[in-house]
Image 1 (tube, rainbow, N blue to C red):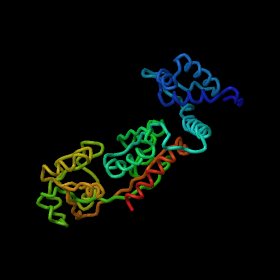
Image 2 (cartoon, one colour):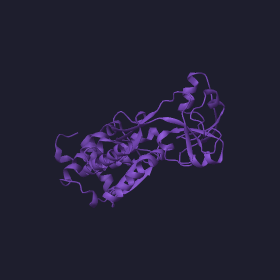
Image 3 (tube, rainbow, N blue to C red):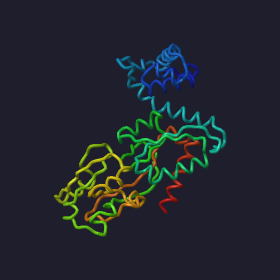
Image 4 (cartoon, rainbow, N blue to C red):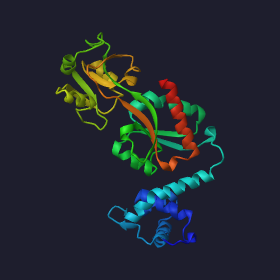
Length: 303
């Protein structure tokens, strides 16, 4: 690359960032509100500046070279720093117009994000919020490429290169409907637990094995998982209409009045939730405010 900074400008870096994210000249041009020839011309200048082809054509678009991939994070940091530099001295939530994209499970949505959304509607009514789920191995890429702003996930799911802040811990309990034969019990034996028929919430879908089954396997036991579902939203209805038992997070069950909790007869590892975000939004005043408001409301809920 030439040492003369006059050969490169901010628009070239924005174009390279868009090309790295989109892997398509056409899509990058649309994102930048430019024509395809303009982006192609900028790519030519970028190749001259970095003395590298940067992208190779393939059947679906373009593939970044190793050199281009090595530039992805530094360029995002530069663009983020410039964005911070251009911001006014203070962030005004009530006037802010932006979109916030959050990855979270339905458990997280019900336990902490519902009150967070209510708070944002009061303090920052012009901010649009999108909440959706994603597989664990997709989260870092979604954050890195700017497709989401932060994720509320288990610490074990957080990539080592992400910023994190602890939110809360939770543990697993047994749950049945209030009309279930076991509903008057506060404890259950291990034999009774294994003899029961269970429903399992499998976040990736389709699995009949979870953290409870891992704990049982350590003592050479199994339970009867008869139903596997992908989310918690229908759990109360399922338990109400069947004789099934579920092992579920305690914070979720306490908000379902038709369900009764029973202490599990074995140790099941709990989990903690964190908010995780990428370096690209780390210094942004709006995102700092959004993260701090979530942290404060979680502290209020869990205290």
